[in-house]
Amino acid sequence: MTGRERLDQVVERWHLLKHPFYRAWSAGDLPLEALRVYAREYGAWIAQLPAGWRALGEEATAREEEDHLELWRAFARALGTEVGEAELPKVRALLEQARRHFARPETALGALYAFEAQQPATSRAKLEGLQQFYDLPEDAHEYFKAHSHNEQEAEALARRLEALPPEAQARALDSCAQTAQALWGALTDVYERTARGPCP
Image (cartoon, rainbow, N blue to C red; front, side, top):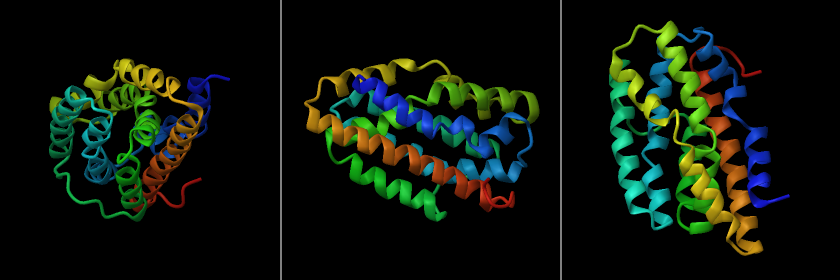
């Protein structure tokens, strides 16, 4: 099994499109308050991404992620909220983990891959849900439009990971697994916070 295949196996186990929160979003079953909490809390994670790319020496991508953060903030404003400090415990745990993983190139590779490998598919699903079920300004759609077809970032991360020596690859894979689980946990916290009951 290649390094990329091992990464994808981990990501598939925790793929966010399987999460009840995103399934409810795609069905139009989320109340607006759930989207507000999501925009506010998850925005703190989006704000961490430039640091991960800078750990890899990818300054241009880091600046692009800063531009994308502004699109996320527009999404939050369209919902009547703002990105701020995370309050939910599992979101805060995700951010603390990101700070640790973004301190070293190999663990930054794994952590970023856990997110970037999923982002085109999750963005397409969220965009479709917003357009079909939620009457929001066009600004609410722009972040998801921008990420619906950006598979090149995951491809670049996978190539870099497969060039690492075995020990560094193992650290990257572990970081990917931890981040995938932490992303799932953060979404569970949002789901449960917005009065949908315990996450199945």
